[in-house]
Length: 203
Image 1: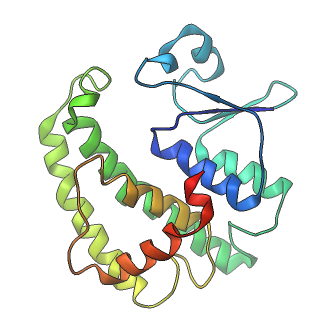
Image 2: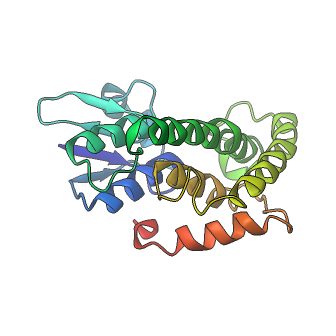
């Protein structure tokens, strides 16, 4: 079994944090995005979409997409439960994880990919208007999130879950995207400080 990782990308980081929370270690091979190693024939044979992470199992099966990889390990090692316990909590975790992916991480990534000079050769064409269109979407969602976090400790309830991991990765990715938290997002700041203090975030 081997995990193909990329230290600079947000989605692989989410997988690393998840594995650290589970206490799972496995062989890892780094794929250098800056050197365009994800575009090589060798890596394209592993994942034709040329994205990380990718998990290659002992039987040769390849699992891509960070949440799919996390679900695989959740089934192998259910404790601690990071996808929720029982139907209501599991559905709530799924809901908030999707919201984190679609409403924050995707918008932050759009700003980064279409405005950062380092992405000029990787995002062709860079469309600055698309970056501009996504900046207010980030702010709007963070306002909603701040209101929600005034009601509970973590993203999906009183238990730390994969939704917290995805949201943390999205919020932290704001920095390279040159985005900042709204000054009045005090509940988001409180939550961010707590989850950032977990040892897994350094994975």
